[in-house]
Image 1 (spheres, rainbow, N blue to C red):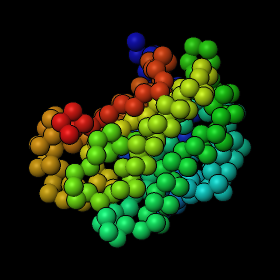
Image 2: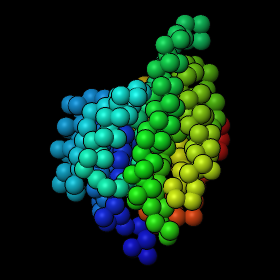
Image 3: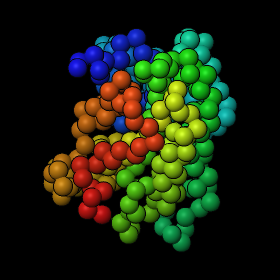
Length: 257
């Protein structure tokens, strides 16, 4: 059973890997034995993440804006020059925008959809040759997209993240669509996180993680191990018969909203 969840010899790419959920995912993959490539727009955050994670295994990073075709090409070329195959791609890079309904700008949709939806599609398509090279009959390659519970249930009134919630619902449907397109050599699934400590949830957790978490069905917000665990499962042979799923990792929030 222990081999079922091991990632020794596998190569994984994690976008949005400079902080937050991206670092949680990368930590789990490294501890399970994978080599990991991180990417995000901010080079300083990537440097800090590499310094933090390097004691756990082989980790490299490249700065790229994955809301653009040039950024997708930069990341794909960087990995392709160093690896013959990729076994797991985690499309975790994300953007958000907050403004009232009356004032929500067009640019707040353009930026968020460019990164959260278009970037997921373009990078997945660009990585297909490397992913196909990493697939075997018994253990297909993986694409794991980061969605959100905000793409499953509507945010409460006052959560003015209209483009974010819409983009994450789009990510969930894109996941299902790509799963059918890329089967059987590449499996495509999505994680729908609830509340985890990150820059994006800073305002939601302003009252303190313990206070906010106590109101959730499981009595706490998500911990790094919760995200690492689902990431390792979806990258490992343990999930070889699962594709097209959207898995809430939310402490039960989506069951009560």
